[in-house]
Length: 124
Image 1 (cartoon, rainbow, N blue to C red):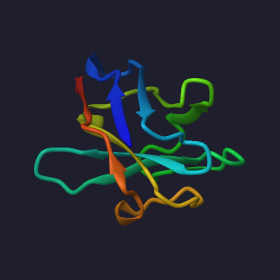
Image 2 (cartoon, rainbow, N blue to C red):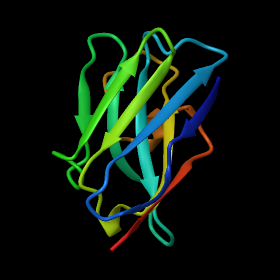
Image 3 (tube, helix red, strand yellow):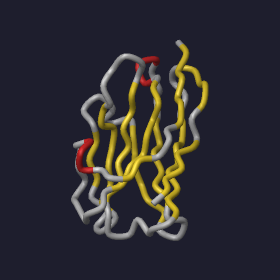
């Protein structure tokens, strides 16, 4: 399974971004997809996750209320919409998928396949 994250960039505080995670080599149907982020010198932090079946979602406490995660079945893609960006949102954003049909999980160890990350930089 290959995951390609895209959509990052340099934005100003208050702006919005739409990140995409496109999968190839395997359908995302039946699995969960998560987004994590990692700022320099910090641990990887859970951002959001979605279960393909039922569309159940989960969000990290630090971003809840500003993010929406959704899926596009036809494109085998997961979208992360981030609104009201803050400088502390600056990080490398990774998408990942499980190898089992799990409910949305915030645990790094539950995800088997990871994309290369897309950089989000928010200026004040």
